[in-house]
Image 1 (tube, rainbow, N blue to C red):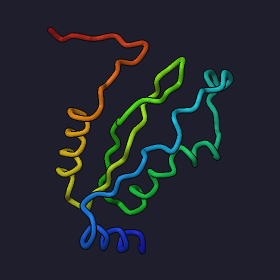
Image 2: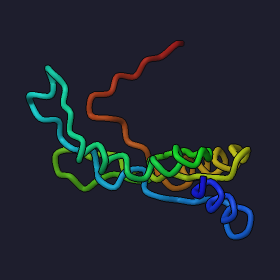
Image 3: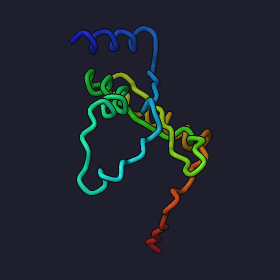
Length: 119
């Protein structure tokens, strides 16, 4: 539809990649009742998935990668960006992701992390 045509034209004429937050908020806390039975929270789902719809709707390749961590005192939650490219330009996404991972983000192990070695 119109979204594919518009974004395709932008990629052809003006840009190589389109960058958005992967999620507009940090991960929300899970309510205690949801741990045993699950939860259906459509407004929260819509907020969390806001930027993912563009990639899915238009069918362009996209990749999300961590770029930092929240300033929460009790836990540091990852904050991610999403990069979208033109059709068949997945290699560009991989190069950008590799650069971000190696040169920008200092990754932290999760609080409950177990290192598994195959050696």
